[in-house]
Amino acid sequence: MYQVAWWSDGPRAGEHKDGQIPILLGHTQINGYGVFNDIGNLKSGQILTIAAADPHKVQRYKVLGKPIGKIRKDDATALLNVLQHAPKEADLAVITCSGGVDASIVSHKDNTVVFFTLIGS
Figure 1 (cartoon, rainbow, N blue to C red):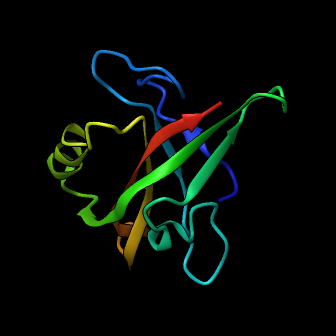
Figure 2 (spheres, rainbow, N blue to C red; figure 1 turned 45 degrees about the horizontal axis):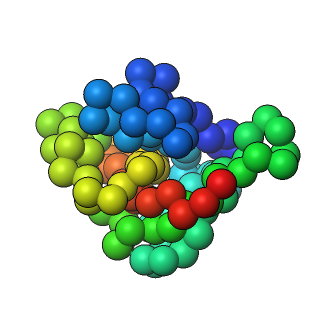
């Protein structure tokens, strides 16, 4: 719940690989704390800072537009479509679970995606 991870098949922050942008993944938790609990409340222009292992090396990103929510987790094509149609200036995507919980799989029903552009390091 407290960790953020890079999507391992994609590039890392500051890189682009075969037209892909880096993707960060993290959890939300209803009635609890998940690292991305407030991601759906982000507003265009807000800043995200990513710290490297060296605390003197950080990258700053700015939110591009509103979070894109209600992407059904059981529809991989919909999520892929959102990622493939990222804003041209997008340098990072952040994905977390959202929506109600499907008790049969003990998981949220949807995903939310937020795109960011690199503004400095």
